[in-house]
Length: 65
Image (cartoon, rainbow, N blue to C red):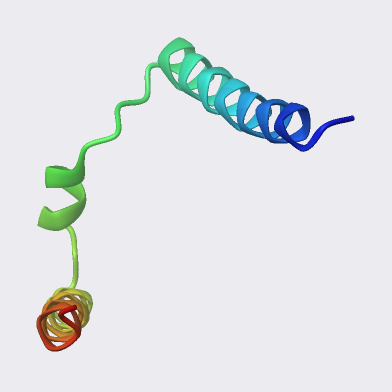
């Protein structure tokens, strides 16, 4: 089997799994809300998230081509 066929089957399978999970979530009536998650986030989780975002920003700024 050529390499492109393997890659096509791999990405097609991943896409199919995503579609199935999305359909199951819709059938169960679950909604994924990022805003709701952030409202219920504890103080330590919020600080950790902000520190990670700050570190990523600094890392990207320091590694310019």
